[in-house]
Image 1 (cartoon, rainbow, N blue to C red):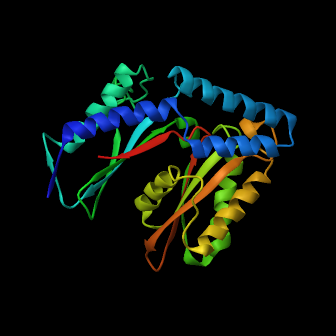
Image 2: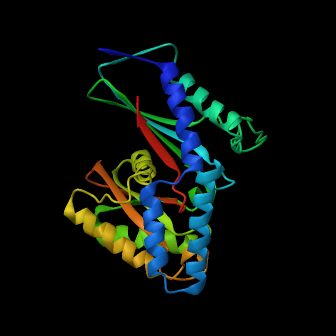
Length: 281
């Protein structure tokens, strides 16, 4: 049994959200630079050059990559042999978010009540937390700062088994096509297939944080990822919606067992910033 103090989780969350908002991952930067080399549209190439320079300046100056510093989403994988000490886990995670958004001067975007008053909480809390118990004696924290220009373009559909691969493919393509320039392409497209209504949405969100160098371990799903990426880029939306071949940097699929009568599919669209960071405590 290993003891982990919740103050260590607070500190990790604090540092991760600063890192996610200031520094784009090397895998994303590499893919953006590759897209710039391959882009045939002059306007699309210009947009990619501006995106890349913006990301470089943010890292150099410790500035936000984007003014929308997002809703804070935290995935926690907690080893079953961990003893958490020092107070409630949920409070510790929110304390880390609060510290990051106040001390890091990140924009606070969360309203306490969604429909009527919509008053800003002033510190970007409460954040969204997903906790999973896993083997081991460590705590793995993934922090996602999810902007709502792309979040608003995400969709979920309860397909039926008869819709099959083609039904999934058409739903993903339709979602991206209808989103157009709104989610700030080029995109990372997370797709959750299976599970239940809520699980496929969580899987789609988690998929947006996977390394762009990774593909699904099942070659059948890996092939669907490649086909969707190709077909999305053939839509011609292009960087920032200016036209061109770089509409998607990557499509990631996560799957789960599901009911015999269902085929839930969720598409979580993420802008080119793909702001996330992770650490093991």
